[in-house]
Each structure stands twice: as structure tokens, then as C-alpha cells.
Amino acid sequence: MRDNKIFTHTRTVLWKLILPVFILLFWLLAAEFAWVSPLLLPSPLVVGRTIQMQLGQEGTLLADMSVSLVRILRGYSLGAAVGITFGVLMGMSPKVNTFFMLTLTAIRQVPIMAWIPLLIIWFGIGENSKISVIFLASYFPILVNTMSGIASTDQKLLEVGRMYHLSRWKLFTKIYLPSALPVIFTGLKVGLGISWMAVVGAEMIAASAGIGFRINDARSLLQFPIVYAGMIAIAVTGLAMDMILTVVTNLSMPWKNNNK
Image 1 (cartoon, helix red, strand yellow):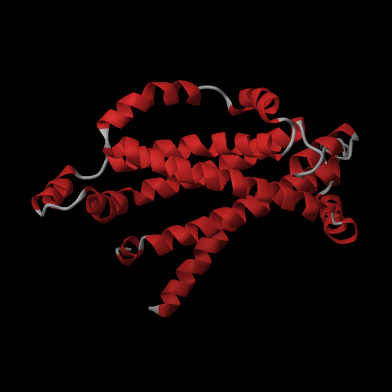
Image 2: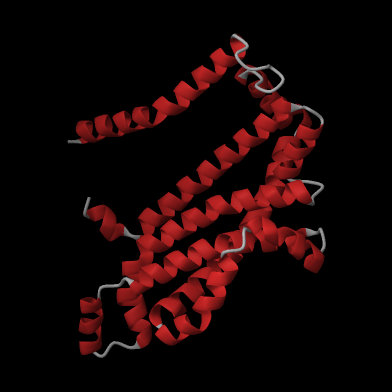
């Protein structure tokens, strides 16, 4: 039984690696045979050396990623807290839903990049404007998924809870929340991905540090290996954060894992 699990896990990992390895090989061949100008598509070996240099000797890549990561953690945490709170309230209360839905739906239609100039006017080019962009980017997917998860709770379970005269709080903790958790965590993952898009966009427009600033600065100087290095750093860091969130998801829903 244990050997079967190890074999299945190994096969799953190998299956996941096929596409990234294929892309890397295709990139290597494209650079080696100059299918695309080396200026536009530097070799992965060149990008690898750039990453090594940026991490080691210069340390700029690590410094910029740290700046962006702190911004994301601050804005995303605030977006998650407010989004989950309002999502629960709107999902559980039709009156609250009716009061906020029209306004929030209208605001949600505005692209996040359109908010950046206005937020800069309100908060300046400092940290507050960037954190506000990340907050807005992460808030709406978390809000919508939380509200959807709460609203889709099985009505039969709620009827049973009311038959036992459960309080509003116990209905939430015992029935609403366990039912909505999978959808809430989906919203958290979507919000996290959009947060990276938001912080890079904000840093490209108004920043003197951060991975978005570094990518834009390298682009203006035609230092494309640094551009690719920054993109890879974002991908790896974002993947690591997504994996951490997956672990938290599994730990928060042990009953789901037991049913597998």
C-alpha cells in the first residue's frame, strides 16, 4: 500500500514536470539556433547566470523581491480580512447583500490598473498607494467567493441547525463555515495571484524599489536577461506562496482529506 502511494506520488510529480521541462528545452533550442533575436530572447543559461549574479554578488533581486513581498503580505492580508468579513455578512444576510451588492458590483467592474492614478493622487507615491492597489485587487475575488460559498450552504443543514436552536454564531461556525471553506480558499488563491499582478503594475508606474520597478527599469535599459530573471522570481515566489496556501487549506479541512 505504501509503495503504491509512493509510486502514485512520483508519477504525479513527473507528470507535472513534463510541460515545464518541455518549455525550458524549447527555450534553450530557440536561443541556441537563434530562432528569435538573442536580444529579445536570451538563453536560459544567460538568464540563470543573471539570477545567480543578482542573488549573489549584487543582491538586488532578493532585495526587490523582499520589498514586493512585504507589500503583498500587507495588502493581501487586509484584503483577505475585509473580503471574508463582508463576504460572510453578505452571504448570511439578504438585507446586507441587497444594501451593498449594487455598489460593490459597479466598483468591481473598474480594472485595477485604472485605480492606480487615482490612488496615487489620494495617497501619493509611497507605500500606502501600492498597498491600496493590492488590497483592491485581492479584496473582490475573496469577497465574491466567500459570499458564494456562504450562500450555497445546504439549506437542509441549516434547517437542522435551527431545529436544534443553534445561535447565529454556532450556525456560522458549525454549518456555514465548514461548507464554505473550499470556496473561500479558492478565492484566497485567486486573490493571491491577482495581488502579484497588481503589485508589479503599481511598481512599474510609481516606485523606486520592488520587482516591478526592477523589471521596468531593465526593460528601459534593454537588459532583457534581468527582465526574464524578475519574471522567473515572481513565478517561483508565487508558486511557493500558492503551495503554502494549499497546505493551509488541507490542514483547515481534515474531513476533506479523510474522504479521499
